[in-house]
Amino acid sequence: MGFIEDINTAAEIILDAHAITLVSHIDADGITSEAIAAQAISRLGIPVTPIFIRQLEPLTMKHVPNDDTLKVFTDLGAGQQNLMEEAGLPSDRILILDHHINQPAPGGTVYTQVNSRFYGPEYAKCSAAGVAYMLARKLDTANADLAELAVIGNVGDMMARESCGLCGIARGIAEDGMKTGHIHITKGLNCYGLSTRPLHLCLANSDDPILPGISGNPKAAADLLLRIGIYKKSSDQRVWEELDAAEAKHLASVVAEQLIANGESTERLFAEHYFFPHEPARSPLRNASEYATMLNACGRWANPKIGEAICFGDRGQRYREAEHMLRQHRSIIRELYEYILNTGVADAGSLQWIHTGDAYPDTIVGIGAGMALSKLNPAKPIMVLCCVADEPDMVKVSMRTNERVLRRGVDLQTALVAAAAEFGGGGGGHNIAAGAYIPKGCEDDFIRRVNELIAGQLETGAPHR
Ligand code: C5P
Ligand code: C5P
Image 1 (cartoon, rainbow, N blue to C red):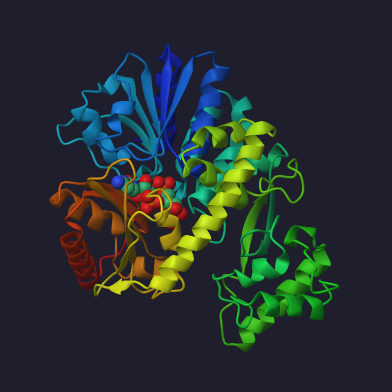
Image 2: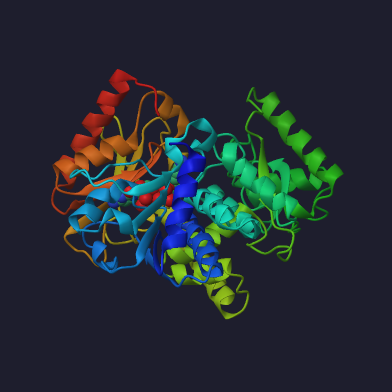
């Protein structure tokens, strides 16, 4: 069936429910999906109970009650239908809103699912928050006020990365937000931190594209800004959002010239950005990518409810707690990133890997892996293994790669799902970013096996999905 039909079916299921349990993931896309669905459902007067889960796996399934409420899974579930079936959850009490790769239940139970992977390219780059938003809008057009949350979820899950902007249905959602005045869509440098980071740090942190002489060198970036008059003194702290149109244009042309002079492409120099004009200037909630980081900071440090409160509009006590989480998140992610680079990774042939032991929580190692990859060998996927604090018999695996490697036939999700199953674990995710839990003790064999599978994918060179 098509997307519209599936959304209609999902809306009917919601409208029929007397009470709903929302089960969602702890990252920015999971928290925004939950916040969209919870608001849309409670606006209908249906009682809703939220549950956030780090990952659906055998040990966390116990948090999903087998009661008579409708269970709506957001940003997880597509890859774990086997667990739902094993737990005896009947298909008429489950609705999955997801964008992860679908793995049908082995016993044949068919769960109702709206998954943006099912409907072709127009829908493919839409995260779970986008699916939740489309359902919310079907339930009531007044829910268009939730578009901002859907954009944050999409941007948080990197849906804007490949094309330097949202596309397809996710772009349409951003336009909904523009129409209601909640979202300002604009083009700017393809950098992170346009609302809060002093411009020289913003430029120095750019790695897509690498800015010759500037990336990795805040002093050179500050000197450039002084030279072109955007900084008046080297201690200036202006942010990109504070530049007027002429200054932004001038800076862009100087940086573009520098790329061209070094024989580099300017193709990825600009990206579309999504600003929220009603949030205070210089706030981390002022644009979609920084807002997503704040939600990740809450969720990945076991406080998704704080992130949920921010999405519901809390700017008081919970917001101050979120600011604290964000500071901690930033400093530990940076520490992890430096740890990976300083310790170095082992080369297994077709992938590179590192075991971080119990130094960092399993919920953040994937983010560190993604950040470190651009400074390592970007041609080889990175695997980070780590201990799981509350499950000493398990090891968490996170893998990341990039579009160029995908084009050579690599698919991390397929490799991790297959290898994890062979070792009695479970995995899932996307071709570009995937994860797994495996039993402790089999790490070396597991690395060898994933390496073998990736080598096989490279040999076949099949185009990615
Ligand atoms: O899909 P899920 O939310 O569970 O994945 C979260 C992680 O995967 C994030 O760290 C995100 O950056 C990464 N990811 C990615 N590219 C995608 C989808 C997810 O890097 N296309
Ligand atoms: O945890 P991490 O950020 O590395 O996860 C990357 C992707 O793999 C996410 O989309 C996550 O939902 C998925 N994943 C999964 N099963 C696991 C671990 C991660 O589907 N056991």
